[in-house]
Length: 317
Image 1: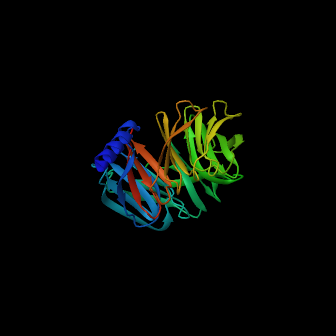
Image 2: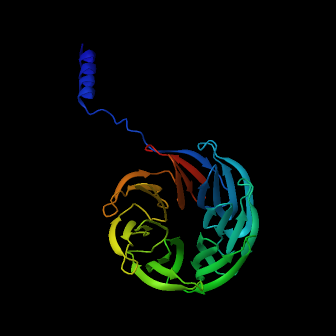
Image 3: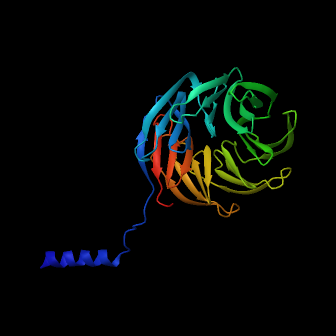
């Protein structure tokens, strides 16, 4: 009787307590080893292009939870920091190897078209029309003319105050994140020179960023995730900063959510429907050092340093 009473008491306690949460949780569904330290990832169509120290791997994502390696390019000592895919070309910021242009006519079998080195350490890259912009430690901001066959001709170079980390061309403006400085905005001129428009200080060191409409979403390293209104290019307005549990490095904004690669903390998901009041809604752990993320649909593709290439299935679409 004593045992029966004890069991009944425990059952009563359990039934009166709050039910366990059944809300779905985002989870890592795939981890793939890369030949070197994975630094960046870009998904285009059915393929993921993962840049690492020494080259770039191509994965078939027919089943996102089981990426299949279909090709690998070796670039020697190149540390591929960023990949931009535009049309049937891929443009690589390849560290001390400069910039590389690839032909993606066969998206699963890239072929190198050109390389332009001896620039210093190239960290970021973007393309507008036939003009390519590269940013980095040493080169500052450089513009190139891209010929139809992929050949590169350097046009102009300008030094920046800080280390030019990333570059993005949006709505006739060139945006550059400068470590130890903040977000710089330039106006492109006909002679391919870039004229200063403004420099807005960030709380810490500006790394990856993404401009969507009139809002700049900035990875502000130790300060966290910062939003800035850039509708007035001459006088950008600071909006808010969300403190994260580690350094914010790269961000991908999809709809009303920002996905932040936060180095050893993993991935932070932030609601940005009101950029003046961004709200942290999820923190996904289990990463060694998340350098970059590209989100497509319900999946997030992450370059995770020595841990390689990882895929997240998000609980929310």
